[in-house]
Amino acid sequence: MTASFDGTVRFWAVGDIQQFTPAVLAADPQRGLVAVGGENGAIALFRDAAGPAQQLRHHSDAIELLAFSPDGRWLAAASADGAASIWEVATGRLQASIPHEARVRTVAFNSDGSLLVTSSRLHAFLWRWQESTTRPLVTLDLSQLMKTDIITGAAIHPTQPWLAIVTRDGKTLIWDYRAMQVVVEAADDRANGRAQFSPDGSLVVSESNEGTLLLRESASLRLRDLPATHRGGIAGFAFDPSGTLIATIGFDQTAKIWRIADGVEITRMGTDGVPAAIAFSSASDVAIAGANGSVVRLPIDVAPALELALVRSRRPTAEECDRYQLAREDATLCANP
Image 1 (cartoon, rainbow, N blue to C red):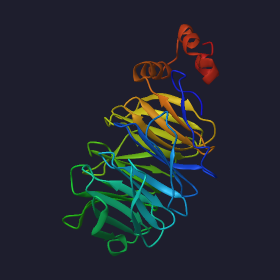
Image 2 (cartoon, rainbow, N blue to C red):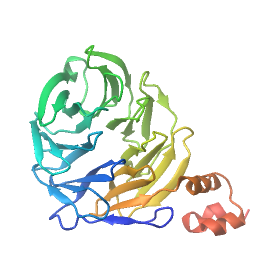
Image 3 (cartoon, helix red, strand yellow):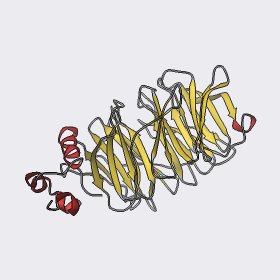
Image 4 (cartoon, rainbow, N blue to C red):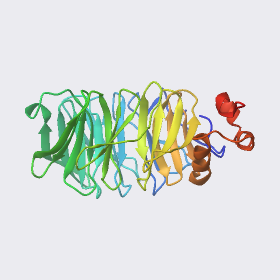
């Protein structure tokens, strides 16, 4: 990986895990926890930036998604082998394995860690999680509601009894799991990927097959204008803990940080190959997993990054071109008028 804004990079080592290619990543910004899921089904759990990874093994196929519980006690994993698992973070012990009908694409805790949502094919499942036991609460069968494609993403609202569901054929819906009914739905020609609510629940976001983020207001599913794009497509995204920033990675081998309020691209970082996943590992750091096997933490200093973003938005002066070395990035920015 290359190029944080201030040039500082911290590496986590996953090379000691045999045949480990990072596929997904989750972080707990409050406690500095980072977990990386591999294409071989292994999970690398880092409890601090300096320490070695603990290897968690249970799954026989790729890890599709990871999620920490809000209190940092539990780590949940979704796998292509048709199971979801829950691990105790302090010990690395497997606490529960939940079989599904097919590939599990989604796993997420609610705001107090008592509920877990998973999804597989046309079904979304809500589970009660208490210590080391899971109890099924609600199952949503999309085939009974509409003609649609498989569920690619599901998320649970932090305060309302809502699930956000997105499908491969472009449908987005908010489903009330207490009333057992659809609150609102929207259709789009662009296929959806994963889904995530903002920390305050006001927004729900998914990535499209056109290389853009689809940012919607949760209550109405009205699209918000956010010019978050990557050439070739978006490979992952993550909100910062405050919900004011969103990070994206793309197949154009870049990572970008956006300010949600006005869509300003605050900073852009080049990556060594196509990145696999991104998450905020603290309020001022992002963790990025690369398909080449690297996992790095990059500090983000928002103030100077925003200053640079504003310079990029207009024709820079000669002094700014020299200070920020903009000609290296784009020769046209500093071309003589």
